[in-house]
Image 1 (cartoon, rainbow, N blue to C red):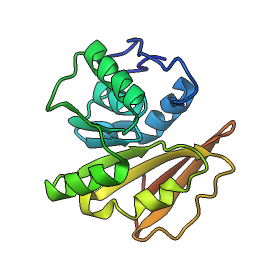
Image 2 (image 1 turned 45 degrees about the vertical axis):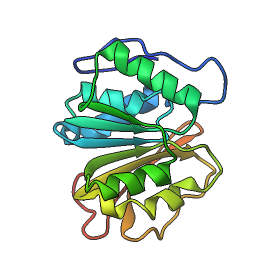
Image 3 (image 1 turned 180 degrees about the vertical axis):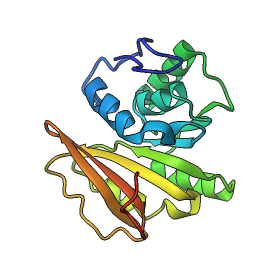
Image 4 (image 1 turned 90 degrees about the horizontal axis):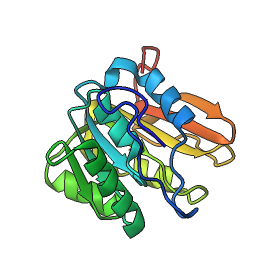
Amino acid sequence: MRIIAGRFRGRTLAAPKTGAVRPTADRVREAVFSILGERVVGSRVLDLFAGTGALGLEALSRGARCAVFVDSHRPSVALIRANLERCGVRPPEGEVLVLSAAAAIFRLAFQSRLFDLIFMDPPYGKGWIGKTLALLEPISAPDALVVAEHHEHDPVTEPFPPWQIADRRRYGTVAVTFFRRGGDLSGNL
């Protein structure tokens, strides 16, 4: 597992030794960031269910302003911290919250933090995408984009007000769904 592009390009990331953490594959990450393009530059990123932190680190590498990494699984937190260190990322550029996604969202809302780009890669088959989307509005910038990775057979269907599906891609058995707030979805992501 490695950083694909940007200032950390080619850096090898610490990977899990067990199947308890399922990092986003390099090819899926590369495709997602190709779709996002310049939207990443200057963005405030939230990486929920961060696992290894690869999505947030890829965003920082490509010019994101800052990233908050959230995971409650202690082995994942150790991987995230190791990967931040490998890339030389320190607060406030990169911050780790050892909390559930819901608890982190409530804390960030209390702190009046807003995010432009929100990644989530929850455990498959638990219904956490819909549950998490329902909590995101208070911490989402007006033009925020949510990128959710899930198994192709996990049902991710609307409605998730105010979020609407803007795009959906499939990479083998992995699916990635992009959500934007309601309104005109005809423009670029």
